[in-house]
Length: 280
Ligand SMILES: C[S@@+](CC[C@H](N)C(=O)[O-])C[C@H]1O[C@@H](n2cnc3c(N)ncnc32)[C@H](O)[C@@H]1O
Image (cartoon, rainbow, N blue to C red):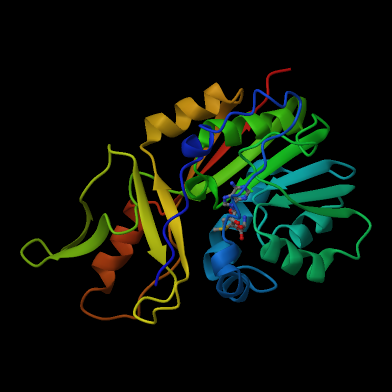
């Protein structure tokens, strides 16, 4: 049986923690733990194809990490950003993720390095990791995986020193929504078009990692329209200062459709990358 999708964070808020003031509500969110083995294999040592060609270069370009900095990667997964950031000579890398299995994979790769700290923590709940000590934060390919984005951005902001920056990279909410966006072919005009079946309604879309294999491995993609995302960033206490839209580097073999495919790849961005600052 496929597992039921994770409950949205709002549902957890219904519990009454007022009787234990000062006590943090326990988090049940384990992020991508059910799909950890699959994801660890997909990303590997250096990142997926999209990580290597688009996501990591854009993250480093917008973050511009400086020697000696302390950087926190929120929803770090199995640690794909550790090596690129350490190669930039930062002093400290902190990674947090809700999945104990992905943090275990990150520790197996990088845990022995004294510059690296890796913690299991729910990014939607405040915690000691969000203590205002970091020069910069990253959150890549995870904004659509967390149930409460205002809490996510508030905690990223809390983790930063005043004036510090954050880089957020995620699937483009206007052009890449699982099950709602598709490529199509217009034979009359000989164009490859992007079809968008829904956009404005926020959605929780179950993602099965091995369709047809009944492994029960499933996660949830939280689609939100752009206005909701940008407003949540502001509500969280961050001000967007730059935006890049990332276009697929993938190209088909030459053939009757390749010209149209190339044009479409250059017209429709797959990811969006935002730089935001915590006001000083
Ligand atoms: C697509 S993966 C991206 C991981 C990593 N940033 C990368 O690019 O490889 C999404 C990550 O978000 C994590 N995640 C989802 N919900 C979370 C939450 N509430 N708190 C912390 N991490 C969460 C998942 O466990 C998973 O590692």
